[in-house]
Each structure stands twice: as structure tokens, then as C-alpha cells.
Length: 215
Image (cartoon, rainbow, N blue to C red; front, side, top):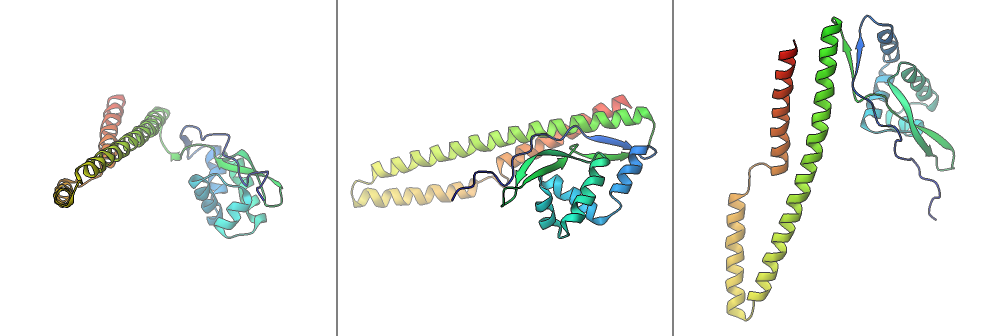
């Protein structure tokens, strides 16, 4: 029988921009206190992998549900996590889905000018990487469609040429030769991966140059 309620809804709130926490601030005291336990750090790490309900966190971390709720409260009070949706247990009980408040959290020591510079670097870096990842997925999808079309065209050509034993044998030899040639000429690195790595390198250079000019 199909479930009327989903086990977990998609998060309704996306993580915000990277957060800088000055080590001399009161916010840093709350962060250090919330993360003083290894279990709390494990819970935060799990939530950065994927938004989860307390029950899912308990199964992932391997502790009691009461302990999970205790650390969730401390992490939320420190501003590290936030309610991001609603899920349901097997019995239909409503549960809160928790997710990180920010894309990343960086502890920082320095003056306000350096803090502003670091925030600018992190914001630009995260935004550029997200755009690059989207472009890479688009390229990978386009390449996959192109290979499928090429494979279909070769198959149709082979079927049309296979009229008789001699033609079939010739087509088989041609196909084997083409496959060997393609294997020999295959790129050492996946084109989409090469695009992402090259783009990441360019982004790092551009942001490094921007930070150098701002310093």
C-alpha cells in the first residue's frame, strides 16, 4: 500500500552565504560550546551531507534520540543549523527536518578589513563553483546525447550494409577497426571532468588576483 505522507520532504530553506565567526566574539563562544562534543560535530557533519530528521540522525550517528535532540538544540542556538522542512515517521508522526544554516562556517581572527576581504573571497568562490558545476552537468548531458546519437547512426549504417554474408563480414571488420581506433584515440580524461578542473583552476586564479588587488 502506498504511503500518503512522505518519509521526508525536500528542505524548504537553502543554506545561506558562508558565515565568518570572529574568535573573539560571543558567537564564537556559542559555536565552541555547541561543538565541544564529538557527537555534536558528527551531527553537524551529517547534516552538511544531507538534511535529516532527528530519527535519521540517530540512525546515522548511533546515539539515543534524546541525545540527538540535546545537541540539535545547542547547534540551533549557536546558529549552525535551522529547521528546513517537515518529514513523517513510519507511523505518520510529524518531524522537523534540520539543515545547515550556512553553506560553510569559518572561524576568523583578524581586523574588520581582513574579515570583509575573506567574506568576499568565500562568497565569490562558492558562487563561481556552483555555476561551474551547473555548466559541467550541462556539458556532460550534451556529450551523453551526442554519443547516443552517434551510436544510433552507426548502428543504422551497419544494418543497412548487412545485405548478404560478404557485406556482413565487411561491416564486422569495419566496426572492429573503428572500435580499436576509438579506443586508441579515447581521451585520457573525461571531457566534463577536464572542463570542471580547468574552470576551477581559472576561478582560483581570478579570485586570488582579486584578493591581491584588494589587500
